[in-house]
Amino acid sequence: MKIRVGFGFDVHPLQEGRPLWLGGMQLPAAKGAVGHSDADVLIHALCDAILGAANLSDIGTHFSNKDPKWAGMDSKFFLKEVTRMISERGWKIENVDCTVTLEEPKIKDHISGMKEVLAPLMNITVDDVSIKATTNERLGYVGRQEGVNAYAVALLSKPE
Ligand code: MG
Image 1 (cartoon, rainbow, N blue to C red):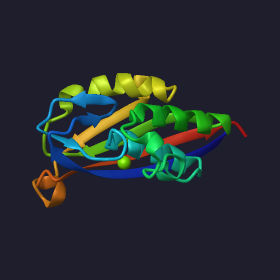
Image 2: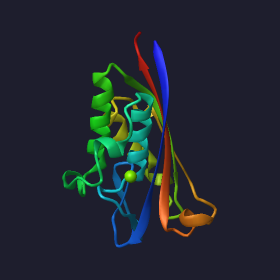
Image 3: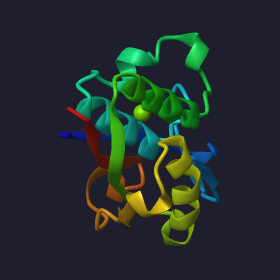
């Protein structure tokens, strides 16, 4: 059995009047994330972790933010596609672990919903999806609510 770990990071600016998509769900929030697609920072970090583990470059390479085809795109599509790409090469996701840094809103009550949405897109169970959140202790751009970060790791396996 071959085992590989991958890491992903993403950041998006926050702006008033924009929808906040996070972990495949639209959350009630005063500010939403700005981006070419739906700007779901958690899914983008996850995609990069999975692609990284399979050494398949990054989300921007496969779904360019210059390509009008992906404008306003639901990021769940990207996660499903990334899972398909690694599956075609014989890889299976074992588990993922993510952390979101965000001051507002508190996402604790939405985490179980996010797991339910994301797990099937990666062909894993909710037990294999860990999502954590922390504030940035009011420091820096996250602390000033100017942006949101997400970090993710993914473990992939493949029979030898
Ligand atoms: Mg992004």
